Image 1 (cartoon, rainbow, N blue to C red):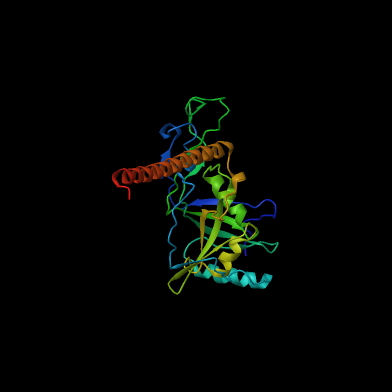
Image 2: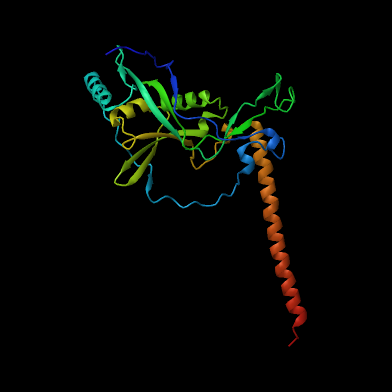
Length: 276
């Protein structure tokens, strides 16, 4: 087959094709209550409510697609079968070095806004505070139904795909905040598995075929159960501390009020009762 793109292990080549618009809504620094509260963390509680799990979604189910070893003839055959099933020009192509290139579609399901550089007004940073030492950011909500096509190599890792997506949107958040997931629909249930950083999404796409029901790739927040504080910037960490202090003060206030009310009622009961 024709060698349409070559890539190496160290410098993968990316080509982007757009599948939807990026406009969803901004929250600029002027809309915030304080200097740093333009970050999503300003609206995030440290004591979130427990969400009921979706009974139709099974987390961390192992999907065996792409686990088997493939020889070069196997890959050539699968590429041929894959190309025969698609109704577009998003073909896969073999390279002379045994690798192959093709397109993957990544869906966005981000619950929180991402941070992008602020817009510049007349050569100055938004807000006119150039040289203040504070890195300003603007929160940007990506549409939940957004999806992007990437042209990648079979050697491109999941981590490199995430970095390429963030770069395309000029997102300045740490890539460690995000993770790539594979979704598979079977027997009216959706099976979800988080990809490791060194997995190769194009290999999964080749083994699964072009059907999005068999396998789809989704970018979501990297919910590990533990907060990686090192992934946040200094303004964000300071904002966390301010939020934590406010929530602590509010909890203390509620407890004091509760005990004060109970003490008052006890004292009233004592005053109205007769000894004996």
